[in-house]
Image (cartoon, rainbow, N blue to C red; front, side, top):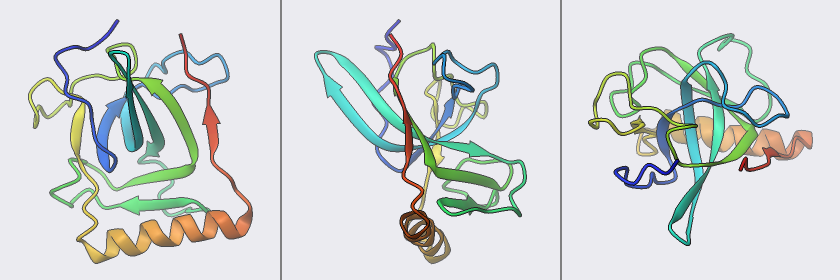
Length: 147
């Protein structure tokens, strides 16, 4: 099912996603924030690579993870959220995987907000997560695209 009324997201957008929980590549039961890493449009379809986001255990940050504070007005988050750059999946940008932002900041679009890289703390946290992941040898685990 293609979401034709949704404009494609851009890298850096934070979207509302049913991130897969296992190797079966089925939408997870819980919608959560995800950070758009890459967008690819071809033959009328849009695929996005998104990094996993959670508001759980944000004080336990591992290599490749960074926290965006919920009070950041650009992010569209209600809680501090940890994004894992080592847990990235490629998904079709459609209603199976993405749902409208619960706060309706962008109408019925899944976009919740955007990672503000003009915020020096966000930029520093992102750069540190990338460097730590490389140093620790934690290459991104990219899930396969579901049909």
